[in-house]
Image (cartoon, rainbow, N blue to C red; front, side, top):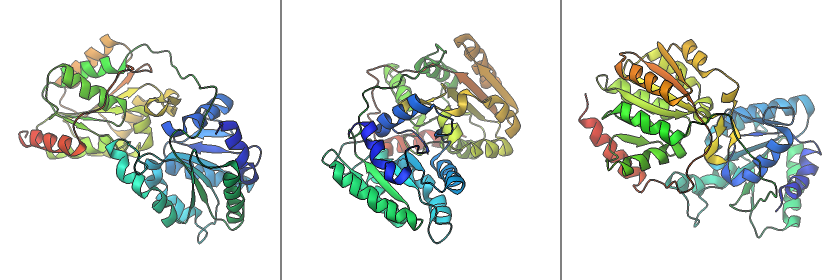
Length: 379
């Protein structure tokens, strides 16, 4: 279904000038491209949120101000972030605020996907139903009339303050004009990670969700190294720094390196306040900032418009560094290596990855067991 037709089908519920907010998803890339090309990422009609719960709050505010039904889009892995506001804010027993959710169905049963999506895919519809959000599955076999009938039902639900969701299968939405995402930085993330691995030596590394972990895995493969030193946070976006903190506090004599991303940091930025307050001297928190949700399509994050280093300073990181060139990165990594204090390093990065970038060949369970074995040898 072409994206223009899809959005037109929503009009009886959302109106001719709907408000969209959410977190990008690769399955919803045609929708994300359309919204970016037409409205940008931070306007009156469309806002890329920090996380899915943030999007629900924005949507609720829009409804309170207009009485209209907003649209929140997300990958199904973000359903966990909407549980609290959906249950304690939107629900008809509380404020009865209707929202239309558009959910990309990663890990759909009997469709091959990555391990972090398998269980989430199994519970996608049930979780929505438990939240009393009526789900409707949009597949390639779904007719336009079936979608229209669901929207008519959603209109009746909205009158009673009830929310509905369209769960979109892979490859259903189409956009004839893909958006182009870019920034002015020429640094390559894979080269940045290669230099970080040289600096980290034999120390444990925790890497964030997405292409960063895939590149880390392949760099170890190319170098003929094992993978025991690395914990690849393939799911739970935004939590790699918290995982690294938990390790650092338990292994105070071992330097722990966290390779994070700008979208992940923004998603759960409160983690930085906790890290700063605990102030582990053995943690190096590195944020590779390309200002984009690249792994799920490239839509910009707010990180291109804010100063992450100032946030780190405000959160209490004693040593805060920034690099915008490979030379600056190498100098900053030497300082981080030599320092005996909590360190934050932001590295500006360009968009893009190798077309032949692979995925980890070990399972998540194998990764965990090898990493734990590595940590047993550390103080």
